[in-house]
Image (cartoon, rainbow, N blue to C red; front, side, top):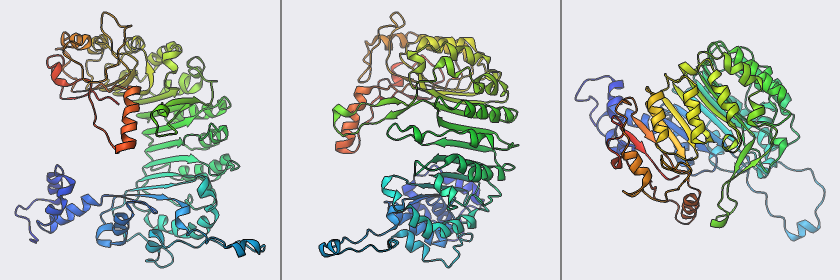
Length: 540
């Protein structure tokens, strides 16, 4: 192997040159010279996932144990499954069951798996500071299902110290921290909420409890809020979320008054994401959320607001007849008429004058299509940041096309560059309005459930395959031309077909994959959009 490249260039330039190469070409690239070898290794092990007793453990364990590889790791994702860390208890014999005596329970034996093998290579305390000098992202998630609960207490007794020590040793370089763990880990000190990450810029926290009796509000006050406030000087991105409730259990939907009310001012906050399920008792919580958004209105440039009252329920069986995806409502208290009368919409969002990116997910999927969308249509134009928005995503809520036209026509969206929206039925009238009102739009994504014609918008059809040359919708599209819409370069029209989705799920269960089909191709309307470079119309 040569140690000197044939052309003397900085490593950064060679890294850019080799970016278009395929990942499976890394072995051949690494044989060129020492510089190419280091670039190939850094690319292959830039992101490493390690879940205890998972398929990727062999590669992850090799990357973590080898200093020659671990020094290139920039993103480390660890998933903890407490039950997999302990060996199963021995099965009692018949004699043992008959003559069993009341004895003090013994802690389960630690399983001889990758976790124990990795920890045995370190002395006490566990120090990983010299092994991950390039680490920038640390993601920790933990399973807390019913099977894991009986192993929680021995888990936190045995692994609490190593986890705290390992996290503390790499805290100096971490800039992005993602925590998807039970709130009990914060309460018991396993998550090391008392640590300081001096360079932390991006914090993502998703909350759930392992036990229904857990005082989650107390944990918010004593552990989570102080941890966030400790990093208020360095944070620029903050994300809070909650996992989907299981079995329609209202006890797993948490109020967030203590969480949002205790946060201090974050001077440089540019992006805020809030993902939560809401109940009728959350009036004070919404008020605290409004106060937090209003306090940071001068710096926020990106806001992702997701307030649900229903959640998707997938199929419980692999049979086709049970493959319908439904949505269960946990509360019908909030409707479009009542939601937009609360302070997050009447005060907080109105004060955000610097917003560039807005992503909204509200109530249920069809709340605005089946009910009256007028409250949303009246609220949106009042946003003072509408004129400066460059990105608007409404990818969850499904609208009627007439409501989308009213939305675009009533607000000044002259700066919009990226728009994602869901439409129940699409015809080319929508493109006519977009070309006239959104002259700067560069990327457009319209998720649809059916198509119609300009002459008969009420007659909706759902294509099961690519449209034929005599399709009325295709003829409308071919007959339309937008020569003045020079900014549009990317157009996506995914079709959400429930019947096709059933068939694809069945094929996935039987054969593991399926071929993706498109209901429309760019070659069928070559003259409609003059500068279109990227097009997609898959059947999802």
